[in-house]
Image (tube, rainbow, N blue to C red; front, side):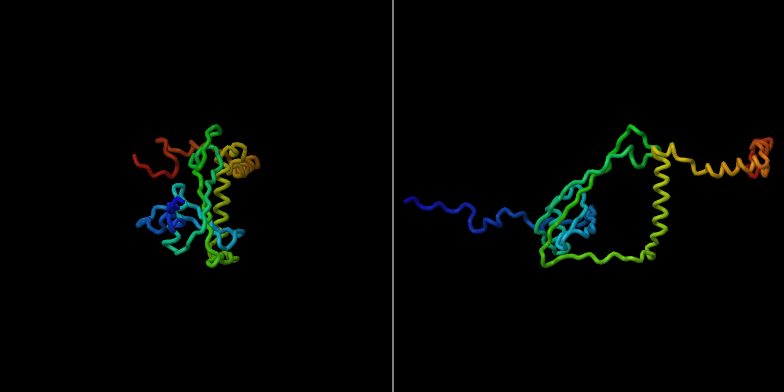
Length: 197
């Protein structure tokens, strides 16, 4: 009988090709991880927004070293942003120029069932964060973006109401119209200007 062949991998076959954990040294991190609130996920799942250059081993290493959280599995996907007209910083977006913002990478980790994380309840009274002022500012910003965007050509101008009131006052005779140049002096200066010669 021929002698049995020795096992190629030996008794540590399960752990032989496992990637090393906790050995990547990061002294000054130049990335940002955003922990997302996902109320419909199980308590032992957590979702993060990570940089596009971040991989699963980086996230596993980071969570293990910083929070001592072992990750059982990690799922990741890249979410493409919606195509929009021109860049967001453009003052007057052009119709035939398209721009796609940077994509977002999301990673969902599975933690052991013995260490779940449950989000605290969301606060109901938001006066401490001045939510009313924030909502008003966001509304004004959205109106300004619409006015400067492609749809702004068909929207009425903000000073249209004041021009209408001034025209009605002129028609009723409450005000007398005078050209602007009539109040200027012989040197072409507007009234009230303090510019010396």
